Image 1: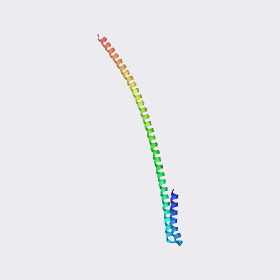
Image 2: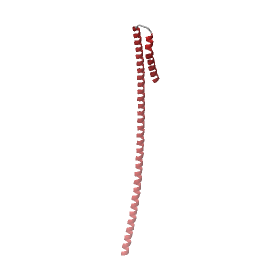
Image 3: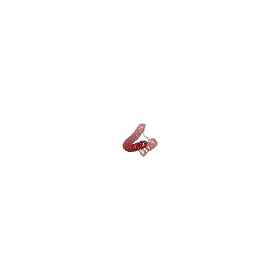
Image 4: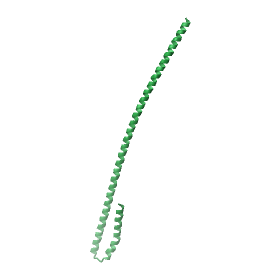
Length: 140
C-alpha cells in the first residue's frame, strides 16, 4: 500500500517536473499546449482519485479487521467470565457441602458430649445417693 502510494507520488512529481519542459520544447500552438496541460491535469486528478480510493479501501479493511478483533476479544472475555462464574458456583457448592459436613460432625460431637455429661451426672447422682444412704445408715 505504501509502495503504491510512493510510486504514484514519485510518478506525479516526475511528470510535473518534465512535462512543462517537454511541452515548451515543442513549438505547438497555445491551444495544443493548453489541451495537453488539461489532459495532464486530468490524468493527475485521476491518479489522485485512484490513490485516495485505495487509501479509503485500506482504511475500511483495517476498520473491519479491528472490529473483528474486538468481537473476538469480547467473545473470549464473555467465555472467560462464564467459566469463572461456573468455577465460583462449583466452589460455593463445595464450601456449602463442607459446611454441612462440619455442622453434622459438630452436632455428633455435641450429642456425644451431652451423652457423656449425662452419664457423668448419673454417676455423680448415684454416688451422692449412695453416700446419703451410707450416711443415713451410719447415723441410725
